[in-house]
Image (cartoon, rainbow, N blue to C red; front, side, top):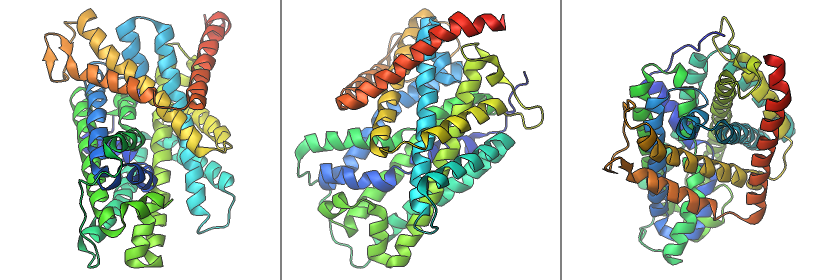
Length: 430
């Protein structure tokens, strides 16, 4: 097995994180969130960012201690010394990467159909294959592709901000108006949190980052701050052009805003940018998913052939192919909203375990070097990690029974695989 090549610096890792967080969620979720919170939706974005920071600081601390692929698996295993629990967390992370890539690829197919008459599922599969080729070629090429796509993606949000604050027909807005009270703000916060998911996958490319113990914590915090600032500015700008009722009822709110200010050309521009946004999300989730499989295989929790690194490209090529095939299969899923909720449910479970791992490691490994340490501590106890744990549990309880049921089913499938693999397949490798 060959080591992965360290190509990513602070700029590329930060852009990788920004691209992960931006995704395509903001292009749709701002409408639904505004329908719940009203003009004060910006506060829901701020609360979501604060909650993301709680878990982000935990990832930063653990990432500086264990800069390895399959980050969540390594974190939990180091804290609880239990391979089964660690495997289930790693399994959840890998499955959510696969499902997210497939779901967003379908979104890409939907946008592409506006320009080219091609079946959505076929477009999604072709995208996954093309992106996987980039993923195979190398992390440097993947990182630069992500950087370019992220800049294009961010330009759509910058355009909305520019239009909102310069359009001559923009109306004054009471940004403290909350038609449904604080409960509406909280409901919007739970929904909006999906738009902040992604920073956790930054830890999974730690083995390809230059000086990860210093670079990873800084990049995680920068990514969250940059995206939060953009989101809040977009919410301010959007409400200057559409009232909260109209914004809340739109299925493509930012495209609607561009159409209102710039005509049909504006809508085409936003739809084109959405193509890059969805493609970028597929790129970076496939990159992260492959590294999760690679990392778990190096710890012998998955078949060892998944840990093979290509001699020329220095990428985990079999893991790349495996993730590609799995994502292609999931591209046949129909209900995108249900799948998105399943992803968030799995992610908040992972966040809860990562925050708990920070707390446990403060006591079982108090003398271990921590190049970055989450602030606000009472003795050894990390207060912000506790906040992250509580907020993760709270969000996990907000989902409907079918979503929770599917999430538990995924965990059960992982448990079954673990026991079957350890009883039979692992014996063949000895």
